[in-house]
Length: 339
Figure (cartoon, rainbow, N blue to C red):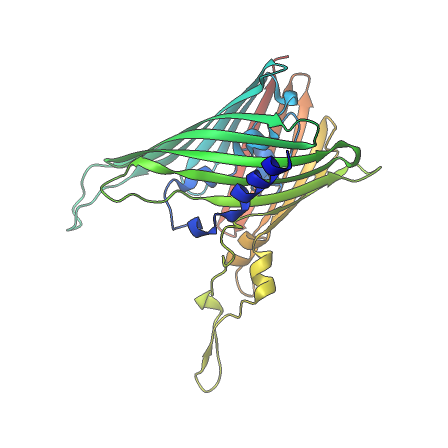
């Protein structure tokens, strides 16, 4: 039993040689938030272990019987003309097989005007990507540990180029019911392109995430702390717009120390009345806030908020996330309980 736990944790926390952050890999849409709840809590929250069937798409270890016969449909009005959405469903097959989970993510990049190398207009084109996931989780007998995996098939079409790939997510979660404490880690997008866009095979956006959350005793608040991109410690970069030039013309770049870099891995979130029919969610993404911060101007980058309202068998969710003074996103979700 202990050997199984150690083996899973080794897989989750060891693959630093495959470190990839934005701009270094293909199929980047795989790491977009998949629901209003996740977006409102700052993004990439992986610690929910309840009815929320979309959580299983980001962390397969969270797949559990409370998701049985839950259908979730989500839509995001993203930056510019980009739109994307997710759908997820779970079914409790039997007490031995437990829960089977299926999910889908699509993104539409909109229409683009085409031009040749001389600037002459050609035909317009579009782009889109889709991923299908199949997941399952099991409780390690006589423990509070749960392990799960997602298998994903990925299709991408950008203009007249197309690609097909596959990926695997592996997660482990510790659930201590007496304290309502969840501790989890997940390694996402372990995979490859089966067919590249042209001749060069590109890496997938591999990511390791760690999370912890707990409901406060006698207070209807659940806090979440997430650390993302743990496969790559140095995620910060020096912004040239924050360089300082002294009277002698010497240029001093932005100083990014150990603490600055550590904080850029952190996402925090709060859920008020997490078990109620109506709840409020707040989040703060420290990396987004710092990278999109405008010098000497308050832009509220990194902040997010949302709510959820349950009406009998339906649960409606909405969230709003701020990126900068010129960019924000709205997320809409509908959860249907077929039980």
